[in-house]
Image (cartoon, rainbow, N blue to C red; front, side, top):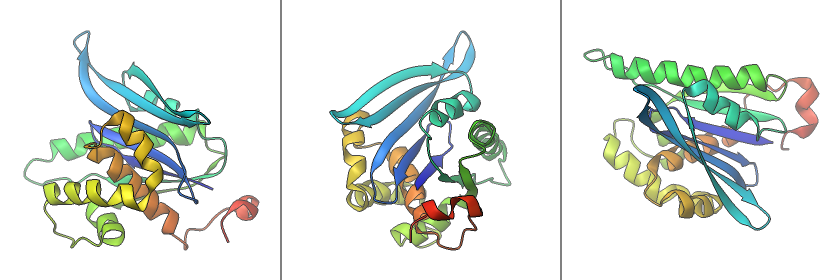
Length: 200
């Protein structure tokens, strides 16, 4: 079984791992301007028999990021995406993150419909409380620092990817934390045709 955690911010990440904690792929992206239009620089690290290989590309939107991720999904996967926090005083930022996350998850659904067992959305405070044991109202900077400190020890398989992407990449650690949360869920209803592939 595969688990895909997605941190869908403009500077975000996605982590693909299995239930043994093997991290096969990591994607992280940064928003930038290309030809006067917004685009995203992607770094993709792939675990191979000889080590971790780094690929780089530039794409125009979340749908293209989804296409890159979909190429690496070859077996049943459970997907979780962090829900955007929408501040009622300044909602535009949160709404942009929501739309971007929808592009990614919608693109994955379109390309990998037969392999996606479920797609879940969870607030950052909820998964951090369950995975990192942080109180619900922990300040963002402290939460990010805690993720950087704890996640590599919880999933040692993320470390070779961080060697390529930077040990200070809290977006990758958050996406890995989301994948951990998804892996721990035992109450998700899985379609019958996939029952034999789920963990005992």
